[in-house]
Image (cartoon, rainbow, N blue to C red; front, side):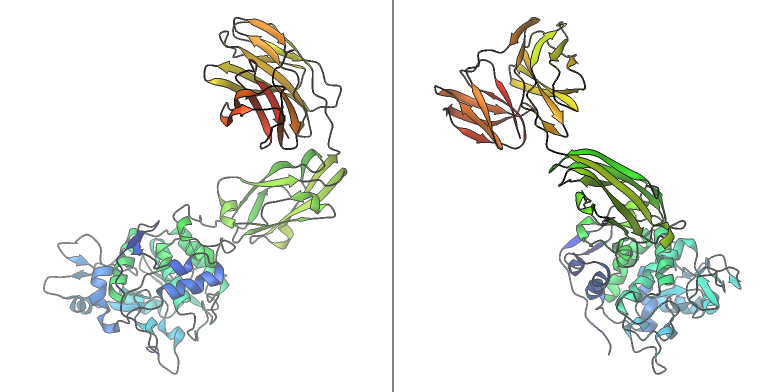
Length: 570
């Protein structure tokens, strides 16, 4: 049955990454789909169109398939099969020019491939402009009904079209193939993709490149070659302009022109990804130039995530670098201790691995028990041969959550106009390092910053002698921080005030926050984070009030507290 539908008139338009223009909502059914479902949705979007009369095609091609510039004052046919010059001369219409130049209407996908009961005209594919192009006569006769492919030698070569025996792996069993010029390989690939999408229900009595099923419809060797051609020969302005003109003539578009990566989502490197229109327009998949390979990490290597406290997490990136992957890379954690480790995804798009950027897979160590833990992270698929899977040993050691005493801060030493040394007593506990929090009391309010040190001192090198400041110290072990030490004041004018002894504002730690401990009411409560931003303000506060905050270090001040206090919320 013939599929005929009048062209709908759209009022709103949207621009795509290829600078093509299509009606608002035209491709909405494709949004959120992947692989075969995406192919089916794309077919729904573009399948219905006005069926044109085969003999009238030159009348439409005079708009879609001519060069944008005049040649000797005449329109010139754009022939993708030869470099001959064919003109529409004065006094000629499109059909008479076509006849005078002895040009032919050429099916890129040969019509004999879908013949049924001796008939080839029963389907709209017979006159679908996405499958027909104006052609030089001799080139058309030479290519016959051969599949696309790469020639190892030629029996016909006019500098644009080649015909000859197929290279190994090309042709799908045909002795000869037709190889277009490099500048048109992508054009033909996108035409073949369109035919595989819209006409997947044809009988395909010749199976060099197609087979009758909804997905993949194209034979594997065929879509792999066409993907390569599409990557190497990007969508051109010729195709963008032709897309608009064909829509004017028969009412539908080629989505593989509007979305250069669409074929990758259906057959190529992005089949595990969901297609979203809003995400289109970024980088495109580069040509595959060799065999799939993972260069990094090396098979048999290890990723040591170090030490962690039970119930806490350590994160470390695993660098992955590869090339020429043809499908998504699968990543799995295996082994008896696999529950101690976590990765955010089990599938990495081939396009991310083939990119010039190193892919960083964030590996987490989440121990739930004390001891040493190991697991194996495997990388496979992506087109890699079975013997080229990559295995990486994950390892870490877990300890009980440490109990850390608050350090004892001691007065600063070597105080100068632009620097001083903050000091504290060495912790009796096993610690990894110390965290020093400075608070500078500026006109804009307290300004907090942190320093780390492996020793029981640290040099502060950006002191302002006109600004008073203080410091407190915490010890850190396995990512756990102790309570803050006492506060040491470094006054303006190079004066060390000393250990803070009289604190009119007392703070107590509670799970997830702190408690105010006062004998009298205070006014003007402000709570600052480490960047100096006020996150809580309260006109009055009384003893016993509790404030819950995210984990972090905070500075608390009131009108009655001359020396703001600091507390760490765990």
